[in-house]
Every structure is written in C-alpha cells, then in structure tokens.
Length: 117
Image 1 (cartoon, helix red, strand yellow):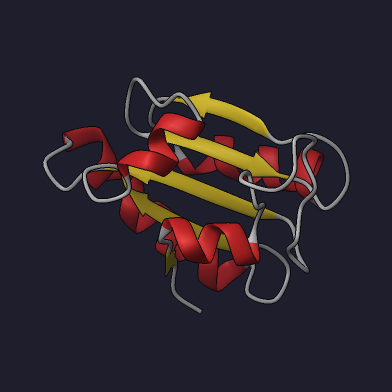
Image 2 (cartoon, helix red, strand yellow; image 1 turned 135 degrees about the horizontal axis):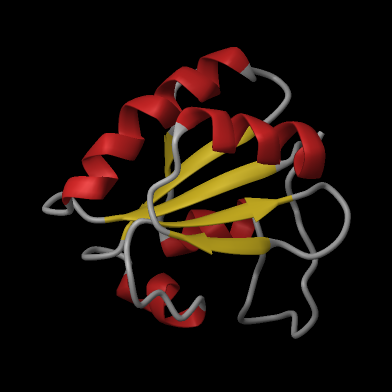
C-alpha cells in the first residue's frame, strides 16, 4: 500500500474533524502517520521514500498519509505547522504526537513499534 494523499476534507472524514470536535477523537481504524511536506523541501524528499517503504512494511497495521502544506494551508494552520517536514504520529488510542524534522528509518520504526503498535 502506498502513502495516501490527504486533503482537508479527507482529513476531517478519515482522521479527525476539527470543525466539529474540540477534543481529539481519532476516526481511523489503524494507527497512522501524517507527513506534512512541500514539493520544494529537500528534507521532505529524503523522508518520502522511507515512508513509502514503511507503508509497505506495515501494510494493514499503520496508515501513512501525506499533506502538501502548500495546497492544504488550512490543515497546516490547524496543526501550527511552522517547519517541514513535520510528522504527526497518531496512536489508535490516546493523543497524537507531533515531531518536526526529517527522521531516519530506524527512528520511524522505533516510534511505530513503541508508540503506535
């Protein structure tokens, strides 16, 4: 399974509807990672193939989404994205965790294994 491109509308239906709910309530069936990126961002381009690999390795266990911050400015504003890449790690239960900056693959795997699964 490849990474899934997210729009604000899809985010509200599949992840969390911030226009309706004040408290975090995750709508997804599996833990997820949301990558806030831009096409011109060098570190984002380094993270993209890692996320593609992880989406295959954790297919059916973790959903991996991408949000283009240039296109989805409302979504970026809601999460206060100031630097990219920024990664939102969403466990099935509990609060999501935001991590700014590019991570190496072992760091992603550690977060997935310890926090998401």
